Length: 254
Image 1 (cartoon, one colour):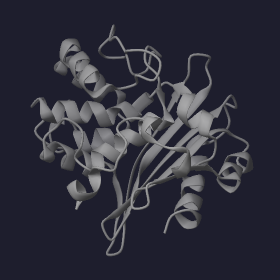
Image 2: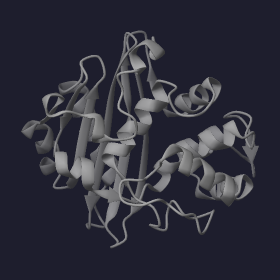
Image 3: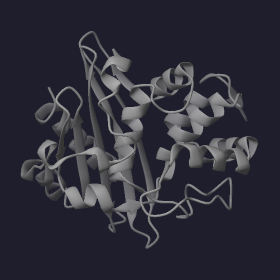
Image 4: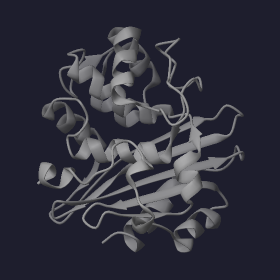
Protein backbone atom coordinates (compact mmCIF):
# COMPACT_ATOMS: atom_id res chain seq x y z
CA UNK A 1 0.00 0.00 0.00
CA UNK A 2 2.79 2.41 0.85
CA UNK A 3 4.44 2.06 -2.54
CA UNK A 4 1.08 2.19 -4.32
CA UNK A 5 0.22 5.53 -2.74
CA UNK A 6 3.72 6.90 -2.40
CA UNK A 7 4.14 8.18 -5.95
CA UNK A 8 1.80 11.11 -5.31
CA UNK A 9 3.92 12.54 -2.49
CA UNK A 10 5.93 15.70 -2.76
CA UNK A 11 9.62 15.21 -1.97
CA UNK A 12 11.12 17.28 0.84
CA UNK A 13 9.30 20.46 0.01
CA UNK A 14 6.30 22.52 -0.91
CA UNK A 15 7.40 22.98 -4.52
CA UNK A 16 5.14 20.24 -5.92
CA UNK A 17 2.00 21.79 -4.47
CA UNK A 18 -0.42 23.65 -6.69
CA UNK A 19 -2.75 26.47 -5.64
CA UNK A 20 -5.67 24.08 -6.01
CA UNK A 21 -4.58 21.68 -3.29
CA UNK A 22 -3.41 24.20 -0.68
CA UNK A 23 -5.61 26.30 1.58
CA UNK A 24 -5.05 28.43 4.62
CA UNK A 25 -7.47 27.79 7.47
CA UNK A 26 -8.27 30.53 9.99
CA UNK A 27 -9.52 28.01 12.54
CA UNK A 28 -6.20 26.16 12.35
CA UNK A 29 -4.34 29.46 12.81
CA UNK A 30 -6.49 30.24 15.86
CA UNK A 31 -4.94 27.25 17.67
CA UNK A 32 -1.72 29.27 17.77
CA UNK A 33 -3.30 32.55 18.84
CA UNK A 34 -5.23 30.78 21.61
CA UNK A 35 -1.88 29.65 23.02
CA UNK A 36 -0.44 33.18 22.48
CA UNK A 37 2.32 31.70 20.33
CA UNK A 38 3.69 32.31 16.87
CA UNK A 39 4.47 29.53 14.44
CA UNK A 40 3.00 27.28 11.82
CA UNK A 41 0.72 24.26 11.60
CA UNK A 42 0.62 22.15 8.45
CA UNK A 43 -1.50 19.13 7.57
CA UNK A 44 -1.29 16.93 4.49
CA UNK A 45 -4.14 14.54 3.69
CA UNK A 46 -2.43 11.92 1.57
CA UNK A 47 -5.55 10.30 0.10
CA UNK A 48 -6.93 13.58 -1.28
CA UNK A 49 -3.55 15.26 -1.78
CA UNK A 50 -4.73 18.38 0.08
CA UNK A 51 -2.70 20.68 2.32
CA UNK A 52 -4.30 22.67 5.14
CA UNK A 53 -2.01 25.36 6.58
CA UNK A 54 -2.26 27.98 9.28
CA UNK A 55 0.05 30.31 7.33
CA UNK A 56 1.37 29.41 3.90
CA UNK A 57 4.32 31.81 3.97
CA UNK A 58 5.50 30.77 7.43
CA UNK A 59 5.14 27.09 6.53
CA UNK A 60 7.20 27.46 3.37
CA UNK A 61 9.73 30.17 4.22
CA UNK A 62 10.45 30.31 7.97
CA UNK A 63 13.61 28.24 8.56
CA UNK A 64 14.85 27.59 12.09
CA UNK A 65 17.16 25.27 13.99
CA UNK A 66 16.03 21.60 13.74
CA UNK A 67 17.11 20.76 17.29
CA UNK A 68 16.54 17.15 18.24
CA UNK A 69 14.13 16.62 15.35
CA UNK A 70 17.43 15.90 13.56
CA UNK A 71 17.62 12.67 15.56
CA UNK A 72 15.21 11.19 13.00
CA UNK A 73 17.81 11.67 10.28
CA UNK A 74 20.74 10.73 12.50
CA UNK A 75 19.05 7.47 13.53
CA UNK A 76 18.39 6.59 9.90
CA UNK A 77 22.04 7.19 9.01
CA UNK A 78 23.35 5.25 12.02
CA UNK A 79 21.25 2.17 11.28
CA UNK A 80 21.86 2.28 7.54
CA UNK A 81 25.63 2.52 7.98
CA UNK A 82 25.76 -0.16 10.69
CA UNK A 83 26.85 2.13 13.52
CA UNK A 84 23.72 0.91 15.29
CA UNK A 85 22.12 -2.48 14.69
CA UNK A 86 18.62 -1.57 15.86
CA UNK A 87 16.78 0.47 18.48
CA UNK A 88 18.05 -1.80 21.25
CA UNK A 89 21.72 -1.06 20.55
CA UNK A 90 23.31 0.46 23.65
CA UNK A 91 25.84 3.31 23.63
CA UNK A 92 27.15 4.50 26.99
CA UNK A 93 24.52 2.57 28.91
CA UNK A 94 21.58 3.92 26.88
CA UNK A 95 19.73 2.28 24.02
CA UNK A 96 18.75 4.12 20.85
CA UNK A 97 15.08 3.78 21.83
CA UNK A 98 15.68 5.33 25.25
CA UNK A 99 17.89 8.09 23.82
CA UNK A 100 15.44 8.97 21.05
CA UNK A 101 12.43 9.10 23.35
CA UNK A 102 14.37 10.92 26.06
CA UNK A 103 16.16 13.41 23.78
CA UNK A 104 19.58 12.36 25.09
CA UNK A 105 22.03 14.93 23.75
CA UNK A 106 25.05 13.00 25.04
CA UNK A 107 23.95 9.83 23.21
CA UNK A 108 23.52 11.57 19.86
CA UNK A 109 26.71 13.58 20.25
CA UNK A 110 28.64 10.33 20.78
CA UNK A 111 26.77 8.77 17.87
CA UNK A 112 27.62 11.68 15.57
CA UNK A 113 31.30 11.29 16.41
CA UNK A 114 31.07 7.55 15.68
CA UNK A 115 29.39 8.16 12.32
CA UNK A 116 31.94 10.81 11.41
CA UNK A 117 31.68 14.24 9.78
CA UNK A 118 32.30 13.06 6.20
CA UNK A 119 29.64 10.35 6.37
CA UNK A 120 27.13 12.72 7.95
CA UNK A 121 27.86 15.36 5.30
CA UNK A 122 27.45 12.83 2.50
CA UNK A 123 24.03 11.82 3.76
CA UNK A 124 22.87 15.41 4.29
CA UNK A 125 23.86 16.16 0.69
CA UNK A 126 22.14 13.01 -0.58
CA UNK A 127 18.94 13.81 1.30
CA UNK A 128 18.96 17.51 0.41
CA UNK A 129 18.31 18.12 4.10
CA UNK A 130 17.64 21.72 5.23
CA UNK A 131 18.24 23.12 1.76
CA UNK A 132 15.54 25.82 1.61
CA UNK A 133 18.12 28.64 1.73
CA UNK A 134 21.58 27.12 1.90
CA UNK A 135 23.56 23.88 1.84
CA UNK A 136 24.45 22.77 5.39
CA UNK A 137 28.18 22.40 5.99
CA UNK A 138 29.18 20.41 9.06
CA UNK A 139 31.91 22.08 11.11
CA UNK A 140 31.25 20.49 14.51
CA UNK A 141 29.98 16.94 14.03
CA UNK A 142 28.75 16.70 17.62
CA UNK A 143 26.80 20.00 17.63
CA UNK A 144 25.91 21.13 14.11
CA UNK A 145 22.18 20.43 14.54
CA UNK A 146 22.16 22.80 17.53
CA UNK A 147 24.56 25.62 16.59
CA UNK A 148 22.27 27.22 13.99
CA UNK A 149 24.62 26.31 11.14
CA UNK A 150 21.64 24.70 9.41
CA UNK A 151 17.97 25.63 9.42
CA UNK A 152 14.88 23.82 8.25
CA UNK A 153 11.32 24.84 7.36
CA UNK A 154 8.02 23.30 8.44
CA UNK A 155 7.52 22.39 4.79
CA UNK A 156 10.74 20.36 4.76
CA UNK A 157 9.95 18.72 8.09
CA UNK A 158 6.58 17.56 6.80
CA UNK A 159 8.23 16.19 3.68
CA UNK A 160 10.68 14.16 5.75
CA UNK A 161 8.03 12.33 7.76
CA UNK A 162 5.99 11.64 4.62
CA UNK A 163 8.97 10.11 2.89
CA UNK A 164 9.87 8.17 6.03
CA UNK A 165 6.37 6.68 6.21
CA UNK A 166 6.38 5.65 2.57
CA UNK A 167 9.94 4.22 2.59
CA UNK A 168 10.96 6.89 0.07
CA UNK A 169 14.16 8.11 1.68
CA UNK A 170 17.37 6.60 0.26
CA UNK A 171 17.60 3.92 2.94
CA UNK A 172 16.69 0.25 3.15
CA UNK A 173 13.12 -0.66 4.08
CA UNK A 174 14.30 -2.12 7.40
CA UNK A 175 15.92 1.20 8.29
CA UNK A 176 12.71 3.09 7.55
CA UNK A 177 10.70 0.61 9.63
CA UNK A 178 12.97 0.78 12.67
CA UNK A 179 12.99 4.58 12.78
CA UNK A 180 9.24 4.79 12.13
CA UNK A 181 8.77 2.61 15.22
CA UNK A 182 10.78 5.11 17.26
CA UNK A 183 8.13 7.74 16.48
CA UNK A 184 5.14 5.50 17.32
CA UNK A 185 3.20 6.89 20.30
CA UNK A 186 -0.19 5.18 19.92
CA UNK A 187 -0.98 1.85 18.25
CA UNK A 188 -4.58 0.71 18.54
CA UNK A 189 -6.91 -1.45 16.47
CA UNK A 190 -8.29 1.52 14.53
CA UNK A 191 -5.41 3.98 14.30
CA UNK A 192 -1.71 4.71 14.81
CA UNK A 193 -0.19 8.03 15.88
CA UNK A 194 3.54 8.67 15.45
CA UNK A 195 5.51 11.85 16.07
CA UNK A 196 8.75 13.43 17.31
CA UNK A 197 8.66 16.38 19.67
CA UNK A 198 11.75 18.52 20.24
CA UNK A 199 12.65 21.91 21.66
CA UNK A 200 15.59 24.12 20.68
CA UNK A 201 16.60 27.78 20.20
CA UNK A 202 16.93 29.94 17.13
CA UNK A 203 19.86 32.26 16.37
CA UNK A 204 18.28 35.21 18.19
CA UNK A 205 17.57 33.15 21.31
CA UNK A 206 13.91 32.55 20.48
CA UNK A 207 12.68 29.24 21.83
CA UNK A 208 11.49 26.86 19.12
CA UNK A 209 9.49 23.67 19.33
CA UNK A 210 9.00 21.09 16.57
CA UNK A 211 6.39 18.35 16.45
CA UNK A 212 6.00 16.34 13.26
CA UNK A 213 4.52 12.95 12.40
CA UNK A 214 1.40 11.21 11.15
CA UNK A 215 -1.90 9.61 12.04
CA UNK A 216 -2.71 6.41 10.16
CA UNK A 217 -6.30 5.24 9.86
CA UNK A 218 -6.95 1.96 8.04
CA UNK A 219 -3.57 2.31 6.28
CA UNK A 220 -4.40 5.85 5.12
CA UNK A 221 -1.94 8.40 6.58
CA UNK A 222 -2.48 12.05 7.42
CA UNK A 223 0.72 14.00 8.09
CA UNK A 224 1.19 17.00 10.37
CA UNK A 225 3.84 19.44 11.54
CA UNK A 226 3.69 22.03 14.30
CA UNK A 227 6.35 24.71 14.74
CA UNK A 228 6.06 27.00 17.75
CA UNK A 229 8.16 30.08 18.58
CA UNK A 230 8.26 32.11 21.78
CA UNK A 231 10.50 34.55 23.66
CA UNK A 232 8.69 33.77 26.90
CA UNK A 233 11.06 31.72 29.07
CA UNK A 234 8.15 30.61 31.25
CA UNK A 235 5.97 29.25 28.45
CA UNK A 236 5.56 25.46 28.45
CA UNK A 237 5.97 24.86 24.73
CA UNK A 238 5.74 21.08 24.97
CA UNK A 239 2.43 21.25 26.79
CA UNK A 240 1.15 23.81 24.27
CA UNK A 241 2.22 21.63 21.36
CA UNK A 242 0.42 18.63 22.79
CA UNK A 243 -2.76 20.67 23.32
CA UNK A 244 -2.56 21.87 19.73
CA UNK A 245 -1.91 18.33 18.50
CA UNK A 246 -4.94 17.01 20.39
CA UNK A 247 -7.11 19.65 18.70
CA UNK A 248 -5.61 18.87 15.29
CA UNK A 249 -6.26 15.15 15.74
CA UNK A 250 -9.80 15.73 16.99
CA UNK A 251 -10.92 18.55 14.71
CA UNK A 252 -8.89 18.43 11.52
CA UNK A 253 -8.18 14.73 10.94
CA UNK A 254 -10.65 11.84 10.53
